Length: 367
Image (cartoon, rainbow, N blue to C red):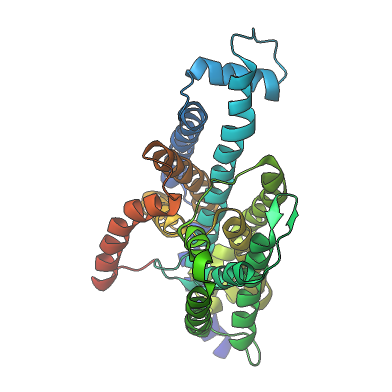
């Protein structure tokens, strides 16, 4: 009798899991394919515009010609000057690619945290990553030492260390014994984030004339993008995001709850730790090179989920491309209106959506 009773919830969980594990996906899969094509086209167009527009505007055919000649080795007839080629290859292309990689990482991390926590209001900074990075950067400003390694200064190094340390502390404190419920993780992240924010406030108070540098980091910017920085950060962000995509099935299981995930064969404790670590690593690398850029990891995964449903196998790749496109467009807008921090632009775009999302949650909306 006990076995029969236990089989009922397991069967029910499997029935609920069908839309998440690849069964009966025809309509949503077709919608996802169309979405991938549209978002990829938008991303490519935004990247071409991002490379071509600026103080010195370049025609799209010039941009494509330079890229085809330098990146693909094609024998395109040269109709541009050395200065034009330097603008494209040394200044704008690294910035545009950095925006795409950072946006991709933040969106994938946001989708991961929303799935793990089963909360549409979760973002990549939910475990204190932002507060840890900000405090690390502020401490670097206060230290009277200036060093640069591979285009990364002490600020970037301490921001990366601070972000990962904050996540590690949150995870350790939230699991005194055995697997920790995600609610405990979320509350611990909020508490540690508040404590780190207090430390940041003290560091800003003591910074004196260096306060502007801290504010510049907090607002987020891609102004210092370079090939060397991209070469260091991109493998971390893309590698972590790729490993999350491989674990889409486990993330789908978490959407049903930890007990249901265990019934479906997911090693809950291990997969939760791995997904948290990968999402946090991608976020830490992103904030190291671009500062604190908000709303990308909140808005993009939620819009994608509304369009194609909760299946992580569809949500993650669409979020990756959508996040990349959004940040490339936002950075282009920031440059065109006078080199304002890109975090300001994403806040202007994301805040209205966030308010509407809060209203949906109050009305009983669930992930």
